[in-house]
Image (cartoon, rainbow, N blue to C red; front, side):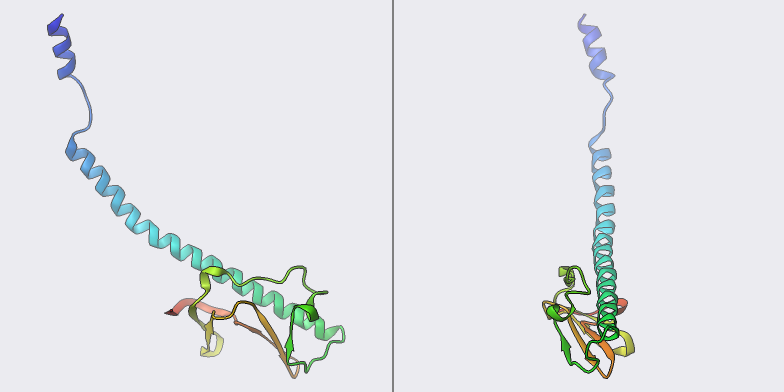
Length: 140
């Protein structure tokens, strides 16, 4: 009977310490690669959301002008455009404090709390503007 149990204990299969260390090292390497990529995906999604918000506000301001609004009004606020937009969009919080490249080599800063819409001679400008390329110029 003792021989039976001692034989059972010797035939016990399992992982060695070396195998466990190798497995943990592989998981560490994979997580070191994956975590920064997830951060990039979040920023890219926020950039896409921001650019969609800018296009929406540009369209809303153009509808305002088309339906008899003042094409020379310097600044529009939420009250001026409330009939054209259901809910005023918010700047994605992950972009705050960062600077990106915009169209015509201008910089897009995210230091303001809300979108601003300006019209000058019929040309609509939304601040902060569209992000082109998605490369961070500065992370304050």
